Amino acid sequence: MSVSLSKGGRVSLSKEAPGLKNIIVGLGWDANATDTGAEFDLDASVFLVGTDGKVLTDSHFIFYNNATSPCGAIVHQGDNRTGEGDGDDEVIEIDLDKVDAAVDKIIFTVTIDEAESRNQNFGQVNNALIRILNKDGGSVITQYELDEDYSSETAINFGELYRKNGSWNFKAVGAGFNDGLAGFCKTYGVSV
Image (cartoon, rainbow, N blue to C red; front, side, top):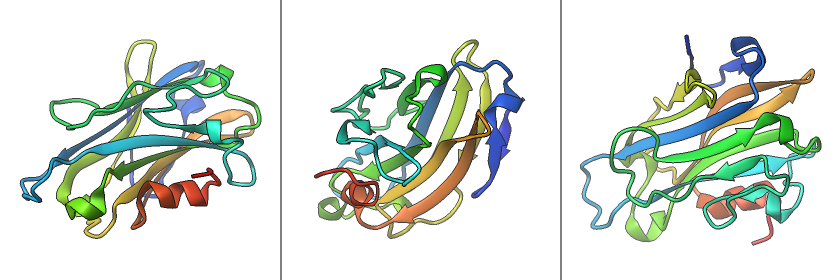
């Protein structure tokens, strides 16, 4: 049975799925009927940060143009440019045992490509969620659905995996920002 989280909620993946090795992180959304004159293109990105809250190196910023982490444990499965259809719009696969020991947190963000020029924001996005599945069998371990009105935000920190006492945990963050992907890169120390 999966655990549904609210903003700020936490769950121990090790307790919910003992022996967990490989996970799938699915991110999904639907653009609403608001006509902005342009298609919505949302992009999932992953920041692998150390205890200082900064990426270990620029290569530890994972997205559709840098799809695999240096340790090979984290693989972005590609850019969905429309978000159409059912299921997860973008997917990240993670082999938890292979994650670099220096990684303290794995942060999952979603940004709207060209949001400012297209006059788009997350208030125009429905059914946004992040979910974590056990790759072995496909069962959903936990999920978090954004339920706030992000009517001016162009970037969202959906959630983060973090290590605590040798086990992996997930926190539903749901924090919105106005400065897109560049803001996340600055926050987490990625050279742009």
